[in-house]
Length: 147
Length: 443
Ligand code: SF4
Ligand code: SF4
Ligand code: SF4
Ligand SMILES: [Cu+2]
Image (cartoon, rainbow over all chains, first blue to last red; front, side, top):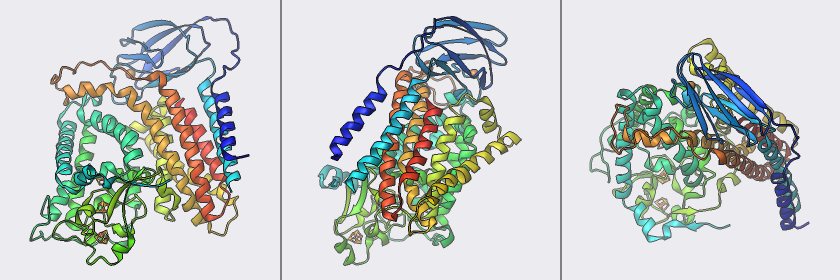
């Protein structure tokens, strides 16, 4: 094969990994509630798993100072005073993995107070690892031909 | 691909030859630097409202790792204010050489220190305290001041820029990754240098100083230790110095054989992975351990940090190499192939920094108006609310950077493996595994 052709082949394969929709397991959307305890500088639980379409209610409880939650990608946020419970309900309509982080300056490590909201499977991760594997294969093959 | 000589363009050439444009930038940088020290020491202890934290660890860091290093190599060193006061004192002049130079010791740095091990150590020390450093204005102010004074002190004792060359924690990684940048400073014609009398580019002359980085431009083949100070452009009487635009990572075609440089690559790669897990991960225990310097949890953290960098990462790399057969010694293969980790590590840092910088960039506006956190409102932006930026394209951008970095390092591995006549496969697999871990941590 000539290198250009193999490059084309690899590119096509790359697109094939990156874009087509994966089969989505059809789980009927549910309403779910999570209590999230926030204390300097961590959430508990720090990882929340839901299915796409679920109606998610977060009950934020601050155990020391004021903390909050801002969810990346969803761009929504709320905060809770110490000892008070605040709730936020939203529909998890975007699949993927999203960091949520504290939106109130709560102390030194505040910028790194982070949790993860996982909506369905983490497509981006699997596709990226797939792409990475393909890329490595592509580089190896195209090089062999040059030599 | 060929090189394009940027210094052919009269505007660029004049801007480099004249001392004034650089001096103007230097002065602005020095003022900013001193202000950052003061802000750190007297400003609010709340990091996200203090100029020292926001401008050093968000603004400067973003520009450095996302733009300056990948595209301009040591470009930052060309305008860095840290060595300036020391250099001016050492030279007894700011612009051109004076008639009488001040009598400093001007010693040569002892041979055993003429490598980057001290730089590796200084970087690691800062890395182990990074959680405190990144969040506490006081500590940032003290470290910035310490760098300035150490540079002055070393300038009084040793010749040239001993601090930059052998100790600066920032300079170490800029030098490592500058090899990947598409900018280089090189001589135009070797023959001209051979016959050049007095080698003013290295020794200095009445019109300018010799290379402050202790590099002889005539023998320059890699970006690592050229600080782009432009001094040699000014002193070379034969107009033999060029600044070129070149393909990315051209320097990586010549693998290094130095262990200090090889380990720098592991240090930087490992730090990017650890930071991605500790700072951006959901695990509170790690954050506590990293922050509580001196506690037993911190000692554990430090121990794990160091064993990843000096044990696990180089260990698996060596295991991979053991599988390859070649005439070169294991040590030689190790050093040569470690160059593969340079593009990989650079893109790890880019991916990590994207997340950190984009989510915190909105602090810049607020801090601009109220740099000390004292309630000022200079430009009316002091009350800008914290708002992460571009969080929806963050994951694709990081994935692209990491996969791109993997391809880049796989190509580099093939070239380096070719030099030492071994198979590149184990090293490529190693890079793939490291990339997958990083993808898992960041996505
Ligand atoms: S080595 Fe360090 S101190 Fe020297 S110019 Fe570069 S960044 Fe500045
Ligand atoms: S001064 Fe110019 S010509 Fe002379 S050795 Fe240096 S770079 Fe070469
Ligand atoms: S004098 Fe020339 S070779 Fe030396 S650091 Fe400056 S620019 Fe680089
Ligand atoms: Cu908080």
